[in-house]
Length: 168
Image 1 (tube, rainbow, N blue to C red):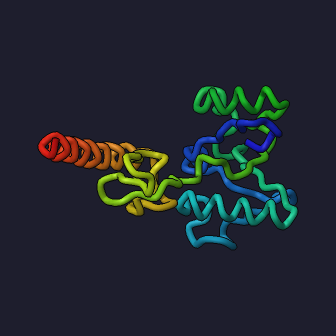
Image 2 (cartoon, rainbow, N blue to C red; image 1 turned 120 degrees about the horizontal axis):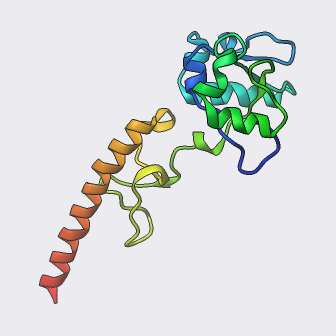
C-alpha cells in the first residue's frame, strides 16, 4: 500500500485473486497492456507493471470495490486496518499501490549446497539466490526451497567438518 510509510503495509495478492483490478488514476485497467493474464500474471510481472506505471508518472491503484466491497473488513482485516489508518476506505476507494521489497527474491548467489562467495558463509531461504524459482518464487516454494537447501547446506557443513577433523 503506497501511503508513505516505511515499511509499507502489504496488500495481499489474494485481493487480485478475488478479482480486484489494477487501475490508473483515470480508472482504467492497465495490466492487460503488460501481460495476457492481467492481474493474475505472476507477481514479478505485476510488480514490474506497477513500477512502470509509477515511472511514467501514473500512480497505480488496486480497485477492490466490486470484487470485495463491503466484505473487505471480514475477508482482509489487516489490509482493511492499514487502509483505514491512512484514511482510505477500500470498500469505496481504490488503494494506492507500489511494488515492495517483498518482490525481491534473494540476493546472495549460492551454489547447489548454499555456499556463497565468502568462505564459510552459507545462505538458504529468502536471502539466497539459488536460481530455481527466480522472481516467481511463491511462499510455498520458498518454504520448500529453504527446506531442501537447508538440508543440503547442513549435510555439506557436516561432511566438511568430518573431513576437517580427520585431517587434524
